[in-house]
Image (cartoon, rainbow, N blue to C red; front, top):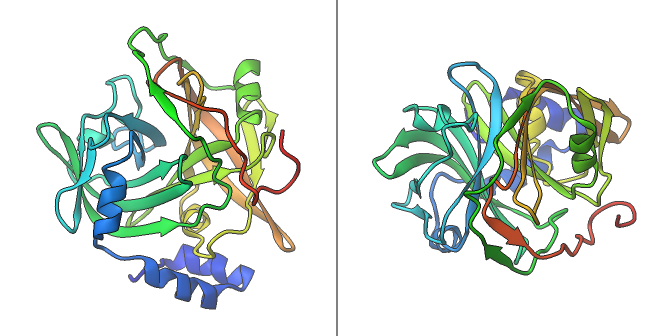
Length: 294
């Protein structure tokens, strides 16, 4: 199929960036280079996205551990020690052989990120991913956070499920400067990052939210996936308390001249207090973010 599928090509052609996408796409490979392997082993968290084989819904979640819990165990394989709690909606997918999974390792300290997509294989200590697409992203819209502390998060609250956003959850979303987005297509899955100054995500109703799609690398992997399959999973993280808000539903892209806006309709929400044992320092907003800082 090549680097891009028909959905990504359709968006690239609509925006008029096929040539740029072809050039940028040369950076996508199947192998994990030594510099990428070294980057992985330094990270304390990894975001993963996949479709739940039981329900069909797409979710994004975060895995954490001491640096080294994610590592390259060969030029075409990433291994992860540990997993997610049984209450996490991604638990079934991460325990099912052959699940297409998208991952993103992001380091707020250096504003570097790396994406690895492939097929999952459960292991005795966690799972491994046979790499199919490996590539780095530019630091656009990524907020710098200089340091983090590890805390004991075992006393966190119980997960709360719902089919509508509460007022507090809506405020959490609109005050966020970062979220992660999982999408799927017939040949695989992808996890990506979205960032901006607080307020870049708008909650329009208890079941709807949207965000402007800022100019990026011209690949349109995420919007290409949504063009072929609208299912999506969103993950919002409170960097100071470790609270996670995971959303699943469907998304569509609205085009208005040179601008694009993605609209998401919620099917289910899961909020877990203190789910992540990392507490990050205050952000330094990316200079690429449109608009004034919140």
